[in-house]
Picture 1: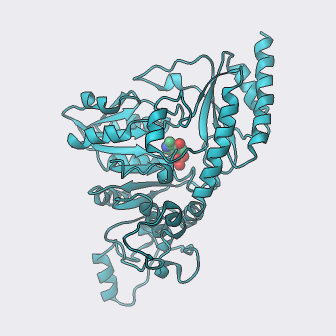
Picture 2 (picture 1 turned 135 degrees about the horizontal axis):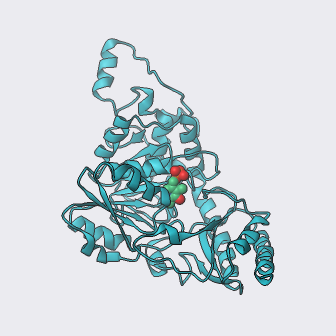
Picture 3 (picture 1 turned 60 degrees about the vertical axis):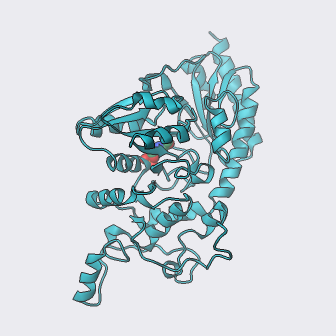
Length: 414
Ligand SMILES: *Cc1c(COP(=O)(O)O)cnc(C)c1O
């Protein structure tokens, strides 16, 4: 389900006007993966539903078998529907070798880690990682003899002290998707590269539009495409984009496990990708409007938004990222779970549910303390995570203002 170095050579959409001048990311989003032989003159690559591919002769069938990564071969290896999305994602990461697609973000994290680990190795995982990523370490890696050590998200170049004989890989997630610490990815990657350790980044919050992982030294960059790439909360999808020397093993494992992404889901990924830049600008603007308003409310102890001072690693965000998405959190000034629940339950413009990155706003309670093992989570009160969708920010603010009044009512009744 990928597209990389030995895939079909094809005509690009059109010859670049000036081959020495790299096109911008927004142009890449619009044009990526739309090879003429894949689109047949239609704007969007078609949805090809395929298992068997028919050949004209035994000779053609045999020829395809000797080059199974090059052109149509068998449905499991994908069709232009999946290749177009993989190629478009690769184009967003200058210096990348190729991209493999997965049926979910969790499957992509698993695929990236398995491509750089073997029994006896040690993996370093950021303490702020997505809980299902931690679960993969416990459920799959531990029984196969890979040990996991968790580290402080703010460790930076200090990661050098944790690297031992058996350390084979470092997993980063920046910002953390629950608590938003921004990691010094370039510093960690520089240390890792010098010590021969592979680096994997979960870049779901920023997408390659706001943080170019491969350019910053990452070996394998993971997206839960379910979030901002699909962008409409209607498909599950993941991707891993590989830097130099990392693609072949990644692809071999996808083929060995028989991983395949449904053409309709790949199409929804490509469809979402075209509008990523405009959606992201709106998520950023709406998110910051709501976050700045929240920061001024007496019931709010702390807003944790990578683009605002006070977020751990905010200065790293300012240095390395070209913008913010719409996901952040806030900590209430005191109160308990019942007060927080009153705040969330009555919201009318926010849905209550997992995931994020769609066009709609979401609110959930988050309790990071019990998830950590290497660092402590200390907070003045319970925490809420918000995803700010594409609604009018004023409506969302009015909704939250009413929520804070419900919070006050419960706190005041004690
Ligand atoms: C949602 C998420 C994932 C997993 O993606 P799914 O498509 O839901 O499996 C991985 N990493 C992060 C940071 C996420 O937010």
